[in-house]
Image (cartoon, rainbow, N blue to C red; front, side, top):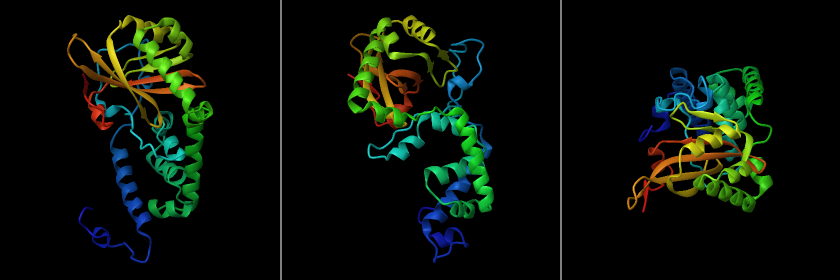
Length: 276
């Protein structure tokens, strides 16, 4: 559409009507076509494995995986909820039309009539799709969003908890990990089909990985606390970006860790690829 006037792009464009819904209609149709042509993106825990950690050495195509998303600091509470990992992962279980209706209605705030015009559907069909989408999401989303958890804890307490997590992880301190991890914590490492479930298994995997020479940067991804880890394999060499971990909290405990092991994501977040 760059360099073209709206009426040149689509002869049905009506100058007397608002431009924004027309643009959203085009974007929605393009996205729905793309969704229909590709498989859903998943987290590691969605990939069946014979046992926790199975398939650890066989990365799958990166196009299969959900990825972390950098969010502007000024993003609203509602915008942050709409990109949380749990919400984005749950969306993958919806049919393209239901996903479009849910995002247009509950995230972007369009009315049922506006959505029906964008999707060439009746208002009744839009409302029906929305109800089905909400029921599907309710089965997989946690009772409280991460934004609700973070707001209840407060910024200062959350910073303290992330600091405790980083220190325990970096030192491979078993007692400290026990204190900060939830009993049913999960740990996944896309694009590897590698995952662990349960505090004992997660800590066992961490301890077995040894005590690397690491540095970290505290960041935010998907509206959640996150850590960019840098590892140095040889003394005197720079620390190289290794993974971006997105943390999910249940109260004051870390309930899920998704370590996106992709170096290209560092540039996506505006992070250096190396630290001296």
